[in-house]
Image 1 (tube, rainbow, N blue to C red):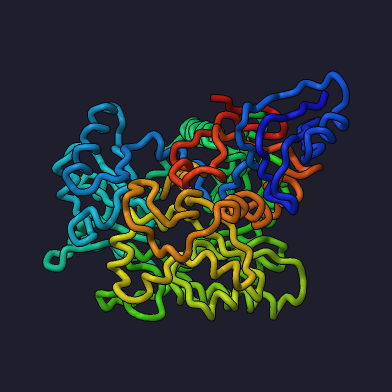
Image 2 (image 1 turned 60 degrees about the vertical axis):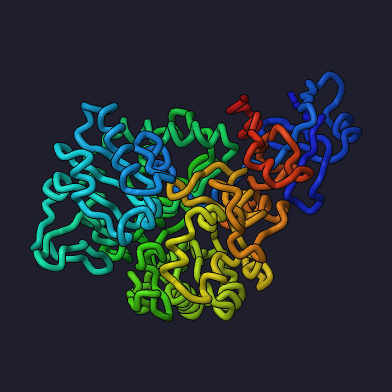
Length: 533
């Protein structure tokens, strides 16, 4: 039987942006518009749901997330906002004391600006927990900080070589590892050890934790940007069990040391196998460079300290991989933060177009934090989606980012309006767990360039703020388009799946600060309520 939703203001993210009623039937939207027509279409005796003056939005589509890592982080020591070494040590001690049976202490969320010189040492962690391995992931998940027990567990010593594209920080006098490991060194030497200690049951619990958070905050779909065998298996188990409450779209991760063309073929096979409304593999993910905070993003000009690191993937290595994925009909998502990495990513798409010829393609560049105007025009002309994360522009986490660049480039950070002005599709996400995934918080940063952590801080390049309606559209309709789901979700429109959220106040007609106070009171996926406060 149909349901008729009334008594709310409906933001559709569609051609007619506002409505006053919506009819839902068989898991899909039957009508969005005026109340009189809705009642006639629904028919007599149809249950009416009065939403009491609330705001209805399309379900948020997190355009860039790490789903199981988000759930895993919720069960680790949270170092977010610690502010300095002493508080980091206190939180780690507290978690270790509360989890005495855990063989390892896991933590996440420290910022480079919170540790001396931006390069933490094992001795600081040894002082907190000397008798168990400690693994503390940085906020951007591009480096990890470990204690002496963890280095011993990893087998890393003075003779361990640095993999290409990554670094084991060392004492300049002794050559011993200091406890700071970044990029491919972390991917190849640390993560496999940690992954081997995680069971299928742990992964199922991580996924369940992420889905619970998504339900409560209004995320009805997420694009996973680091899919591997274990994560996909956990998602497939949940799909078979009928416990997915958000639609998941995955990009198969390909690392620099992989057999890249074999990985592309593997991703194509998975895309053919996983193509349901609940779980779909759509493409591949490649890390072209690192981060500004860690001074590993590839820039055209040096950092403030004079360093100029190269990319993880150069164009010669990247171009044939992108072309192979393009030929297989896969989407390619490329992490490129620095301007030089962005140019490499654009060049790889140009190569794919040149060798494969005309055809439908929907490739993406992730983050684009330091982008030149000329390169924005290039990516727009190629139809490349700019996939960006407002929460990364939060002023509370920008001090180190700005210091590492140290020049006029800081005034061009995260230029969202320039993307749309050039004609590029713009999709919003969060990159959780590198940042909080709650969408309304994300929208506050997008609409104000102010801090959701500390709203009293000055805006970060205020001219790049967006009207709230545009921000919400980039996080719903455009994020759905960017993952090839525009005919299913992302808008409140007849025929689409009934994925929507009810917010307790109309944030469009209130001061921006109300986005930080507003709460999702109902989340509906496929016409079924999955959360009510």
